[in-house]
Length: 176
Image 1 (spheres, rainbow, N blue to C red):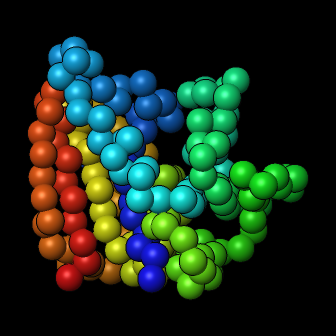
Image 2: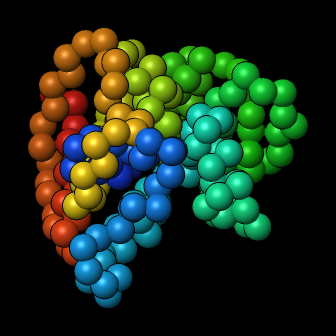
């Protein structure tokens, strides 16, 4: 069965965006030459992305307005907005939990939960995330959008591995 993987970065104090919703702080403490390309290795194992409307909107208007950067994958955008789907980008009003349960039964590679916090929380409340791959960025934001805000229940995890580069620490956990 396909795994559902949260692959995301957060500040040291637990935020995935600053108080203005920006993610321009997502970098290490030194030069890019000190970075490891964890993204390229990660995406080899996925073929499906799930994100909320705010994440989709940020990608298409701020982070990469001229090119859909996830063109190699099927992306589901959970939204209440009325949008026309394409082969690559499928807009849905289906609950994240129902969508993930359905996708897990289909053939394919793993499913990447790309963001945002509300969608992640809904999947955590249903205990549907199999692996948590969190890159901790060496920045303290003080306020913003918290990654694990409002999670309803305790979820026990097992640390699988860690790695550090350029001041960033990657933590990889699975459910216990």
